[in-house]
Image (cartoon, rainbow over the protein chains, first blue to last red):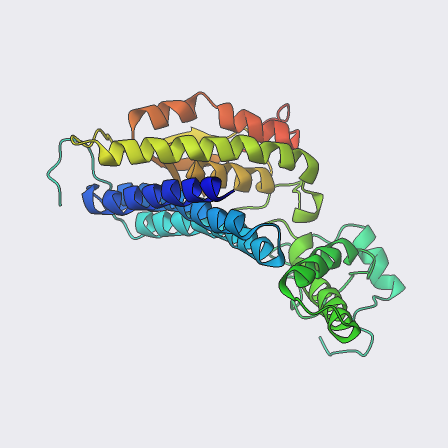
Length: 101
Length: 213
């Protein structure tokens, strides 16, 4: 049980780290959305899930799983809302070959 | 819109109104959310049960006072929110024959979710690979994808699924066309195969209907 939880925590941490690096490295707003929306959703889900596994089958782990459900609902919604707002505000997406801002 | 003592119990007249199809249109705006017109206690029961389950999960106290408090809260919230559950999601123009959240095929949705979860893992790995690669192998682009789903709930599910899966984020939805930002060329090509669109169509059984617009 401990091994599974540790594995989930470490892998989740890796995804969150990749997301953070992505936000720093990617060239424009839209691309950064990808790093934020994907890696962080899975990363947070794995980490909180890992804590739930560590906790065993209790009321607390049920609450933790609820956190996972809400994060995975809210994250893509927020990602889409940000992207749509940027598009409506007229932000032009970066294309390959352009200078990086 | 005056508050009546028995506002949770609709009159027989209101129930007939509901039966004949009380469509929320622009010309006939729905009354305030605080007044669940045309909502019976029985119709709100499934949602109250879900809410009560949530209460049981969140509240560790199991004595009579707290349980009855939870049950009462669940029923009241379900009644107040009944209009929201009964309305199609506000996503662009509402199409005729729109489904509401209550008509969602939850059982088939349960089989769709594991597949989606698998796609999310693949997506995260792809984005993580692209980000950690020294040369940053991305070629971002915006593509238009035509969905085959005519009704709103299906389009909502597809839009959210696109956002979650390999290198694509839905930016906007116009009628049945999705404006999608793809991080890589593979991501854009993956969308054009229409696999996900077909999955969602199968989920809602709307594959043979002609797409609206």
